Structures are given as structure tokens and as C-alpha cells.
Image 1: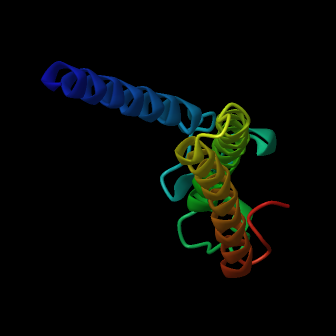
Image 2: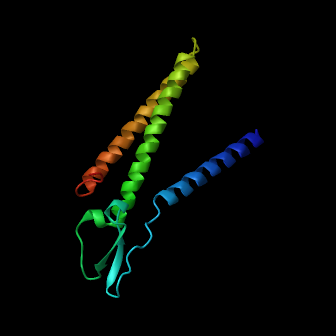
Image 3: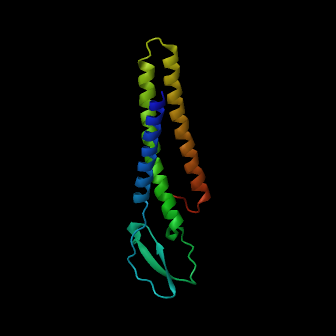
Length: 143
């Protein structure tokens, strides 16, 4: 039993490390393409908008697309959308398989139903999180 728990802990730690490494590489900032002057500051932009830009230090921008936090938040949301979609589809397929192969076993039938219900609840929670972000961020997170 202890070796199983140790094995599961090791697999979990490796999975977390792989997701963290993937996240770091996906959201890594674009290398500096502009050499900023003495009174300028470099800001990161999405790759399709040129990567980086120099703005005067005293200039304040109100365009949310030029905010680096917006850039990272959008990347995180897109990554989570793919992960949630994959998890929901996988959960529904696995729960359906458990339900179909129960053959009168009420415990397995209940477990399959719970897996499907939890997958749908997870999808609804993600949809509500997305709606809250759309409401909180001026102009919306995805345009």
C-alpha cells in the first residue's frame, strides 16, 4: 500500500512539474525586438501585434491590449479552455463507459453518474468564471 501511495505521489509531482514547465514555455515573454531609449520603457504585446513596443515613460496608455497582464491572462484563459474541454469530454466518456458496463451493479452505476455530473459541473464553473472575467475586464478578455 505504501509503495502505491509513493508511486501515485511521484506521478502527481511529475504531472504538476510537466504542466508548470509547459505553462512557463507557452506564456514566456517575447524576446526584446526594440532597443528602448533612455526615457522609454519597453512593454510586451501579443506576437501578432509586433511583440514589444517602446513608449515614453511619462505617457500613460489606456488601451488594455497593451497591458502585459492582459496578455498573460488571455493566454491562461485559452490554455484553461482547452484543458477544461479535454477534461469534460474525457469525464463524460469515462462516466458513460462506467455507466454502460455496470450490468446491474448499482455502485458502478452511481459512480458513472457522479463522474458525468461532476464533469458538467466543472464545465459550468468554467463558463461562469469566463463570464465573470468578461464582465470585470473592460472590453472583454477575448475579442
